[in-house]
Image (cartoon, rainbow, N blue to C red; front, side, top):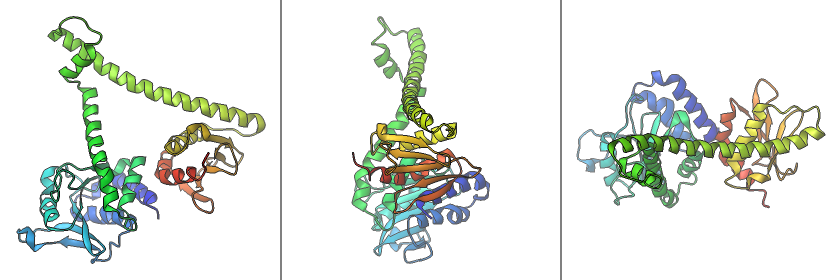
Length: 346
């Protein structure tokens, strides 16, 4: 089973059965071990995934971390698990902090089964950062996450490669959090900075109150308008392609779900090829998504004209037809779709 499929299963498990994961052991068995198994680690080999790891140099008798993961006989990842109801905080890093210093570990993972925090020593060598460089909620896995997690796969584990992007990930995440806070609660300095371009006069308390609300609304409108513009462009491109198809295939009916699936695929591969190169060609039995509107350059096929939905992928030598539960499930195949798109240079 691929990492995409495993994450989808674990996400469903967290959403549906979190009430049964009230202990550390339940979290380990139901989520943590399957998660690292999907990354290629032999969780049944105590010499590779060491449970209840202890180190005498820590100096605290009986203190352990839940797992130490070895690669080439060197400890590289430490894992500490908490019950799913735990609100993870830096106080829970205590054991990881001490073990990170006295082992050869380069990464530490703190998790409650739902939330995963990945830490390293970006700020000071051999000293665990209190702020994670990668955090995610397993119940809401975003497409870009797969690219980052694949760097931790056992077969291609590359410390330098992970650290090369870790700092960018860390500060980008922190900045996004601050921007989100600023949108909802803009500071006085920010309000003055923006409103000072349009307001003449002193910023009295009444003026500040007025413009704080206006800046908040304007911020939201800018984001909303940007999203609408992107969707409008995608819809216009879709309609142009579909109109051409329907004129030559009068018996084919393109559904809203097929249109939406096409737009999702198009959005995913825009990081690899120009969106204008992605076309839809609907057929009676499936909806084809092609590069350059060329049947010899298939990107995906959507089999939505039945109760059970499928998507066909073409990153291997043969068509791979996979069951999907919803259109959002397409995001789980981001890497495979992009790999297919990369095969078709201009």
